Length: 188
Image (tube, rainbow, N blue to C red; front, side, top):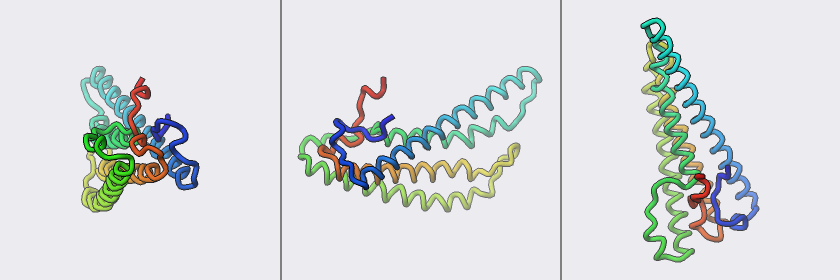
């Protein structure tokens, strides 16, 4: 899977900063895919085990019902970060048709800087949430609720780094609208 979507291979130069941005993008994609697949598999296996045990014994195990509370936030945040990496979030692009490449570059760089600052700030504030929720313990598994809330912080950091690497790609790209442009062919 290609982390950075561009219209041609020449749109990104091979500078050290651009190479580092591509490496960070690939790491973000890999970590997000691992989080999403792990969450899906563990939730499915846990809930399937609960169904089988209930069917056979008329009693539940208890812990499988807590797994979605812990893992679903990781699934959601991993998906959000993957969508940002692929340029698949909803975007309003009407103004981009009115301004040229230079205007689009300035607009998109400002946009990514704002996104980066916002999500790093939200991750920082999220550390206070972890402190507050650290005392909440799921009764059957004994797992702290902070693990579920940690997904938000990890997702915010992933989104902030995605914005940062997008900003780097915008600096090197010949066409700023080609950076993270959604390619319908990639969905097939």
